[in-house]
Image (tube, rainbow, N blue to C red):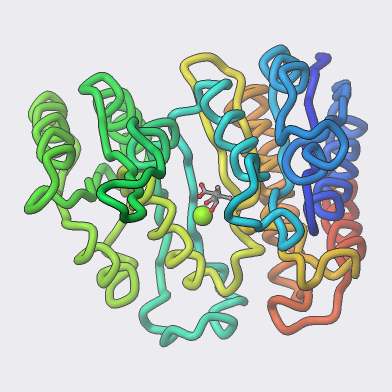
Length: 355
Ligand code: IPM
Ligand code: MG
């Protein structure tokens, strides 16, 4: 089969990890007889530099017209001026909204050979296998009004946390759907003791819970969830939450896996078009050195094969190859090893070809 994949390498280490991940996709295409047609576009700081905007209408349209989008990372000190009219991150948010990718899946697994890479006690990390589902196109990131102003001679700023029932419903339903193939347990995270939007969230989650008696539903306040992720992460399986809560909790959860560089994500819409990106940022401090960990991006490619291209077997081929390479002790600098970005990807490609 033939597929169109838009690559948005972005800024910082983005081009390095996307470059290597594309080679992995090429290896899969070769081995399993598929054609992946890549088209590369600018998004983020690089797009501001070239076009004066973090995402052009053409780039967004090209993404909408592909089977899937693979993104590296956006942002960096060069574009960090708080007074700037546009920011790399705005391009990413416009892309998420424009693709309608309301559900951001962030699986967090602890590989047995990386237990020592995490600052947590090994016994806490045993059996950790969490799927965080972060709402991605609503909540505090997009709510209106969102602005700065002067009020009574004072500077004033506002962001709004708003949700419609249908936005909450579709993400909770997806969480229940995905829980069916896992441990049949959903942890819904909110702040219902304070926030009205969370009380709506909880009410909808409870209703869907009643309709799905085979799935165990628990409600947890976000502050408690933050604590539980560290004290008893193995007690969580599918976790579903609001955009900003999910942003914060997934950075926290990445500590369990030993390095942010390990973790992939898939952002899904009502259609099969999806956006795939590692959860790490552009890491300007190590950009250009060829030492970034490409695994988060390579595993994001596996999720792309699974969810957008419906190539489950090929998705597992990548996951198994990564697993074998990590088990063999291969490590990039973030994990305390010496492999370069390219060497790590080459190891993974070798495994795919061998299997
Ligand atoms: C993430 C990032 C983004 C977010 C930034 C870069 C806008 O932190 O994907 O988690 O906050 O969603
Ligand atoms: Mg984040």
